[in-house]
Length: 97
Image 1 (cartoon, rainbow, N blue to C red):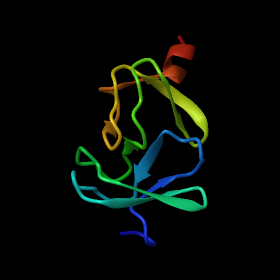
Image 2 (cartoon, rainbow, N blue to C red):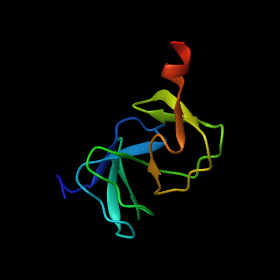
Image 3 (cartoon, rainbow, N blue to C red):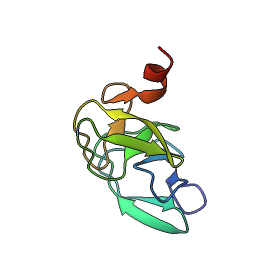
Image 4 (cartoon, rainbow, N blue to C red):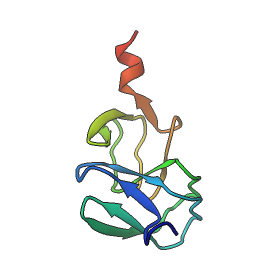
């Protein structure tokens, strides 16, 4: 565990957090979110530096990281699930086409 927490969400409106070390599925973790903490259990193993959902996200919904829209969910994403190319479509890649 790093500095008393396992993952970080820099902005209070972020939908995802970033793992500060490998996180096994089903293990209670602490997420630093703004000035506070959120506790949850990842439903998937999450590798160092990868994102996971802090809340249930519906398909088509905008996903925020660092307070900015980073993409849209291409499928429903449950709290604690890994967020990556299999369930997130980049809005930036779309904008550059």
